[in-house]
Length: 521
Image (cartoon, rainbow, N blue to C red; front, side, top):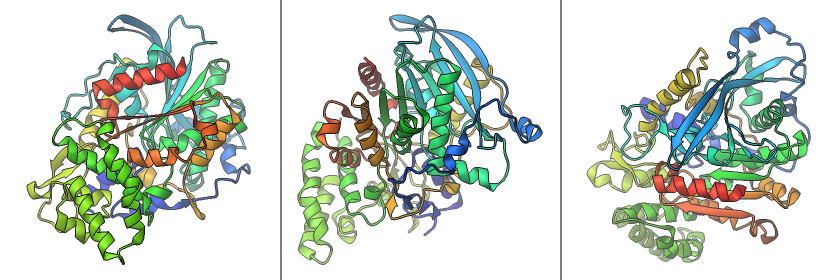
């Protein structure tokens, strides 16, 4: 049964935020479409994103009509526990051109530089979120920026969007550059027509644009000699390795490290008919059930991880034709997740995320969050035979985060673009071209390649136990396939007791801060 109008819009926006591979029911299942073969390194139209910025614009009147205002630089001082940070903020944009020198898009960029630091040794980190269709506000105001908005479990849609000093800001050890891809934040097209949208709203065009923005920023700020890092969240797991690869091989820019927050690395094992998707989700579903009785750490899930790797897969592969194996599997899943045994047997122990969300606490008319399964909310239509609910762990964040981002940009940073700020632009996800071909979209190929190209490159991967959108065990299964020659002592995976935005928790945010700092040392 299709989603209700409100739920459909909400699902579209939330999928845009975090690139969910398991979509339940809706036309947004296009996210699982396969991508073009990853091995093709031929220079595509995506590489026409850049040209010398001084080249004449073909349509100056139209471009200036749609353009963002000039950059604005402001000075700030932040009093934090044990230290005071004096820094310079610049809110502005970088214009992208096509191969003919015609302006295509203005990409909004927010930069924070620590005053008095040596730019030759001071690291700089470029941060972006996922979607496609999400602005960088999630990482900026949730985890790494100098100011943050509390986005814990007590936040509701009407919570005041009041920013506070972020004691765990990464500005302690790196300058920060937050990038909003076109269609998100205040970033916008300055050219019209379907072709420019098709170019930027596609995997390769997006990767090229992000890499060019990073290179252009480094050139503009004379920071090519600085240690350089990238951080991406969710669909940022697809972007991250691919952008590093583009920088290494096409832009002539080396990268020292990559940080991936709750990433999606491979759509193949998390969607479609893949049996591995059930193994990937089971530990997170079990974590959601166990946390109802008390605090849960990853160590507490050793038994279910072991089961997911062994007997679970064995019985799963036997298929429903083997009734004994199917009943055994369904009953074990019921015991682990708390789902009623009758329901588990009816579904053969094979729960997609949306089914789990509704069945977990259905007797009391509640549903779990998708981005954080530990957060429960009311089902607006508990008496319906279909699913008509949003995400109690994310819907409430949209209003306060949007308002906080607008207030920060326009008041604190004094940059005042016209038009609306797009925290989550559902239309981007709806128009996105995930590619076509025999191989679904993944970035593990590029992850292997960037590790092989630069033996000093470090990778930090993080995730949350209760994340049902990008389950941590699915990430673990992908990372386990990396050859030790590439991964040993260079790829680290840290899992926190939290959801997709695990950094909403104070302890997790501090730990993430410390992990990134240690990586950069």
